[in-house]
Image (cartoon, protein in one colour):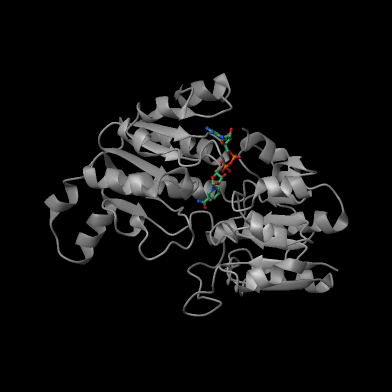
Length: 383
Ligand code: NAD
């Protein structure tokens, strides 16, 4: 019998379950690289249901009950008096989503003496101290690929929202009508230089979706793509982020957050960019310096900033990104569409089934195992 603490975002303000907009979601059979979608022995939810909030419990209440395990589900995650911190000392498993991250800092992990598995229902395990996990032999796993396409779609939407000045135009459609005010900052994306930082699962999906827009596509990654893919998408490779940043009109960030990418978009990097550049960041908020982004928007060095990742999450009311000009921010939602939730809830169950059965977790789901970076972690969080 194990104890699992699951930290999920709060239920809808209007109550759970909500009235759904659609009756079903398309069935996705495999991912673009041919790998299989999550394949647990069973699921106890209907795909398309809201699973990522407390009442949704990732569709796993029955699974834990039937296994005789203890399950605590909470959204109360911050501060020493939070339910999360109170329940942590005897937890064997912590499940958290990057949208509402339960920060597993060194101090918190030191309190969690029984912790064996930190599971991310989604992608990106930077909210876990990966060094402590390695030192303690804690497994860190995530549902790789489960929401990569979801994020890629959101990214394309936000690139277009910025370049075409969608948000102010939408406001004019609701309240007033002045065409000149809508278009004085509106451009076509066609012909622009668009650069992607990290061509992993999300970055590659963004490149593929942007190719038909007749833009000049640039990328950088610590692992260069094959000559075939570069030729197929007509990609310009840059050896580092600096070279890419100064060569493009639009930058989209898709790298994991770790030492090498922490506060990468600082004042120096921003000032090296073309005046009027756009940045879209659906990777992690801490890959930029928030005050430097807000200042560059105010000065006009940046024409726009969009994305869905912040630090901390949720951000305080006075976070500079809430009020900076020319932003098209959303809360952290790109990877938690109802479509994505069905996949990452099933992926979470697949990982749990392996954990309880003592069978191997798929290497692509692993970030840390056996005291070292493993699988996707060894590939993507490379020093
Ligand atoms: P992935 O593991 O498939 O790809 C990561 C890529 O980053 C790899 O190709 C790796 O070589 C590259 N990389 C690592 N360090 C780099 C560096 N210093 N410079 C350039 N490239 C570097 O991961 P993915 O599925 O594409 O996800 C990428 C990130 O997106 C995640 O780590 C996560 O932080 C974020 N994410 C956000 C959401 C969301 O809802 N906004 C959802 C999923 C993932």
